[in-house]
Amino acid sequence: MIKAMSFADLEAIEAIEKELFSSGWSLEDFAKELKATDLAKIFVLWLDDEIIGFVSLREIFERGEITNLAVKSSYQSKGYGRKLLRFALDTMSNDGMEAAFLEVRVSNLKALELYKSEGFIIMRKRKSYYSDNYEDAYEMAVPLGGNV
Ligand SMILES: CC(C)(COP(=O)(O)OP(=O)(O)OC[C@H]1O[C@@H](n2cnc3c(N)ncnc32)[C@H](O)[C@@H]1OP(=O)(O)O)[C@@H](O)C(=O)NCCC(=O)NCCS
Image 1 (tube, protein in one colour):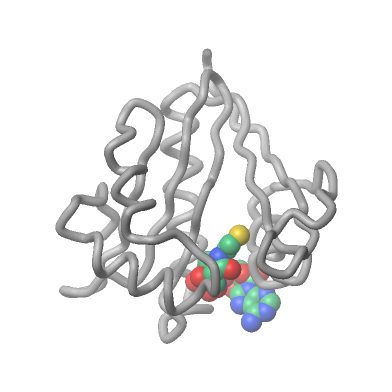
Image 2 (cartoon, protein in one colour; image 1 turned 120 degrees about the vertical axis):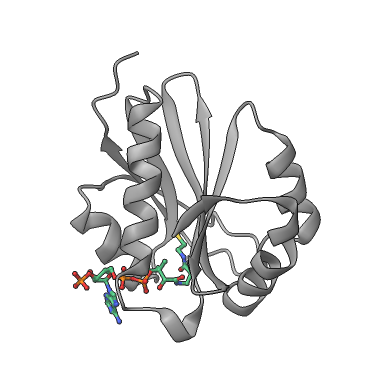
């Protein structure tokens, strides 16, 4: 079940983030994002009584941005990432966004495949985008058909 994240979920989300990203968001970053209710949304995926993944997005005018997407490693490659991504895209579309954008490391083949299969295309490459290892990012986008 996918639900809006609450402050009670912060530690579970931070644990997933720490497991998956070497220089990811801190607990404070998530808390700040949760408070920015006018432009940011975070959704968590519950399986039984456990949070196994999350997706976060921002909506600025007609532009939607996926800012984070993660599935606990022991639950990956079972369709949960796609489920979260589709939920985020549906949310943005229903909110009137015209397109969704995201950045992804050029080496993250799994995420790239997922995004391409959901209609995202590569807009451009951003050189040395990530500060931890200066890896390049692809900026990707998909039209949403919002009705702004
Ligand atoms: C990227 C991520 C969110 C995908 O979630 P997931 O639950 O593992 O992915 P899914 O099972 O929904 O797979 C969706 C698609 O991804 C691709 N994929 C999945 N596993 C893959 C693998 N081992 N190798 C290559 N592509 C793969 C496939 O296209 C797959 O679709 P298919 O099963 O119909 O062939 C997840 O792996 C993750 O949290 N990774 C670490 C964090 C991260 O990189 N986040 C994205 C930052 S931009």
